[in-house]
Image (cartoon, rainbow, N blue to C red; front, side, top):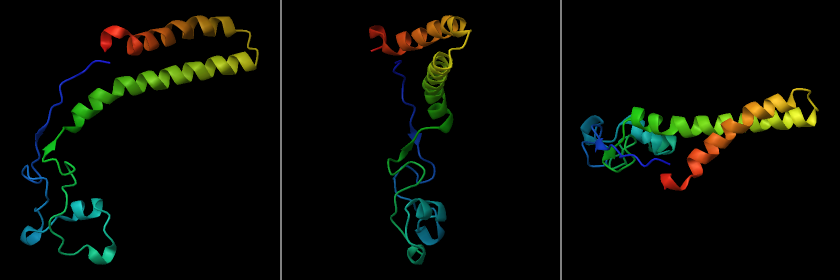
Length: 122
């Protein structure tokens, strides 16, 4: 797979500390308290909780970067799985168009597998 640069920016929610203090009187905010999975009776006036936005790192990756890096592999997995399932279904039901389905699916599955498992991408 292609190795891309990880774009991390200072978390604006916790100002790069990794600890949430954006609530009232320097306590943790409601969102970070909910992400910490605290019981209901302990959710008031908590301080020092891990920032729920960056996970305590103090650095956050933008959502668009994460989505752009994950869409292509997920699309390849879903497409290959669908085509293999279609081939299996056509084989089990002895479909008269099995040879055409195989001629269509084979190169696509081969291209996806060849791209992700080729040695030049490592």
